[in-house]
Length: 306
Image 1 (cartoon, rainbow, N blue to C red):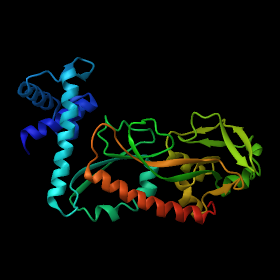
Image 2 (image 1 turned 30 degrees about the vertical axis):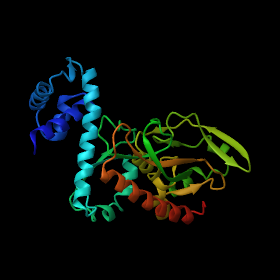
Image 3 (image 1 turned 60 degrees about the vertical axis):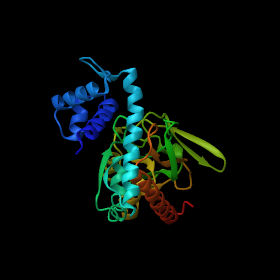
Image 4 (image 1 turned 135 degrees about the horizontal axis):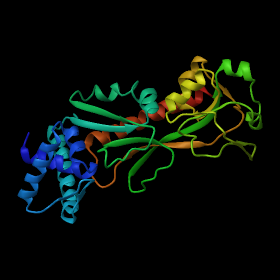
């Protein structure tokens, strides 16, 4: 690999992560080596690019300007390589950020249709039910459900996910099936990440709105864990329909209060702001948009929500 090219890649990662150690781990080198390479780059450039303290590594004014120009150059090189091949073949590393549940349940069963077309493309999944720092984590493309905090990011709507309430047959046999929202009082509620931080579950029917205060007995910061808790019969869960679809189809979970609506959340594919998107990121965005449309339409029709 060209030393200057590698040093520029390293520089961008140190700038975005604020850490020589983190950037070095990403690129397979030690912290001292990363520090030495960047120092050499600064000597070549003739300017200090970072302010180094015991607590942080931050860009200088010259470093910020250099970063904007370097990222544009690296993106242009990637685009040029892709165009020169003339085959549409994608190469390199594509970093995809999404929730664990979305990747496991929706993406992994389908992504082979994308990667089989591009055997030289490597894919890294960054899984978290918390929203990732797209720039700091060097994310190329993200999949997100709900409101988008970064208005400067480039977002494409994939579709709409309906929220529902469900429980296991075992729990309902033991505790009874609530027939209206108010009947949820006295039931054991499971609160996953999508419902944490809200005061109540809101239901809509015939133009009327009903809210039930959420006092969850089981609080989980991961969707997979919350669904597993509901399957285990620990209580009633509220969450996205698509996230629980497998369990609903298998009968492990049963939808309740189905005549009431609970609102929706939009799903988006997001490209980070501040730099041109990789060809692989754009191609993946097109792929997942088509896949999500087919998937969501079929599954929502299956549950008679459309």
